[in-house]
Amino acid sequence: MTVSPKPAGAPVGPLPFGCNDDRPADGPGGRLAPSHPQGVLDLIPRPRQSFANFIVGDNAELVALLRGEAAAVAARFFYLWGSPGSGRSHLLHAATGSPEAGAGDAPVADSGAADGAGGIGRYMDLREPDAPLGIELLADSHGRPVARLALDNVDALDAGGEQRLFNLYNTVRQEYPGCSLLVSGPRPPAGLALRADLVTRLSWGLTYQVHTLTDAQKACAMSAHARSRGAVIGSEVVEWLLQTMPRDLPTLLAVVDSLDGHSLAAKRPVTLPLAREWLRSLG
Figure (cartoon, rainbow, N blue to C red):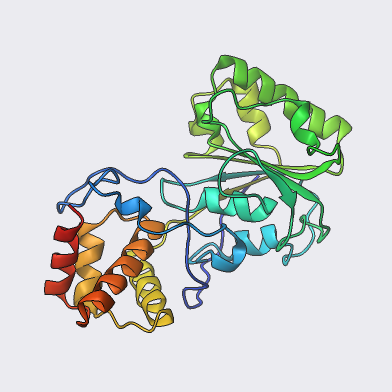
């Protein structure tokens, strides 16, 4: 079953971060690659990824479902897909209450299961070397059953991983009625280069596209984030940053923080000349 989220029709919010996926590479307009000298991506520490700091954009229906605010549904299997920078990894972290990196397990703090129940959540990035993909994922380090298991970047699986995930789907369905399985990838299940029987299982339950923020929504988020710091960044500077920087939201908001810090140190307002000076100072 494929469900298309309805447009939110609401102001962009809440702040600040909206994704943890691979960043887009260079594109038209002279945008900087994520590997820019001095580490644009490392300007500030990344906060824990949660629903409270996910910018909803056009994903209101999906977010409500994952938070347990939507009407109860019988599905225990979810597949989320979206382009790089769409925020699908952020949502998996938020849905499981897990740390941003690693195969951590944690209480599902600001989200319940689809029926509103809590429990243990666990996140796994399948791009990680030797990522476990068996029944050991269905219990935490204390042996407690996992209520929500999130597996990110399913397209990274090799043949052995495909077989293990196929087996895991069957095990969860038959033997773990209290566990929900959330899987993500860059394309809908039918568009993945995976074995046919695994594609069928990825299609169990609900499939949602995670919609990338528009430039207008990103600009709104950047301006709001600046205001939350007591800074004012004009539309000219915001537009320049959107054309110059990597376009994923965590980087753009990290840039706002760094630019504001440069402005305070220089005791000058944030203008386009100051922004260009700041960029030159990075290396």
